[in-house]
Length: 163
Image 1 (cartoon, rainbow, N blue to C red):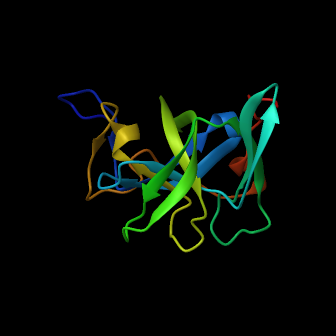
Image 2: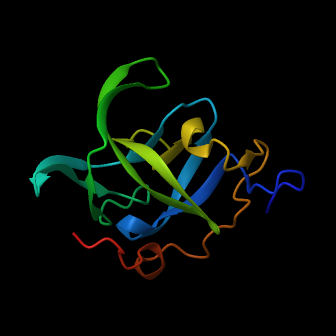
């Protein structure tokens, strides 16, 4: 669905998004225009060196309450910065950059890694990532569609980034 005046995709306050570089075909994201940065739920975060560059190995639990489903991911470290959560508490987080796929719209975004076990969404998309890409309808949900069933076969895709 697109906005007729701007031809930008229209998103609801929650949407399913894919992270193709990590082989994650769908993860539920909260679209939060009040948050500056985006965040992805990471269970384990371990920095390492690869060819003299700083990288991270992190595991993502894409589906809430599915502790048996963990996806191991690898990405170069873009930054390590202080981020304030919704309660005003500062936390130092690793920042990576990756592609996000919303329906047919592919964007590049910075994502912070943090444990979101206490949150309802495995991912939060902040306004910096959405800037100039989308129009948000806060009264709508899943404007780009919902997956029919969450299973191992539909959740994961082949990773395009072999490390």
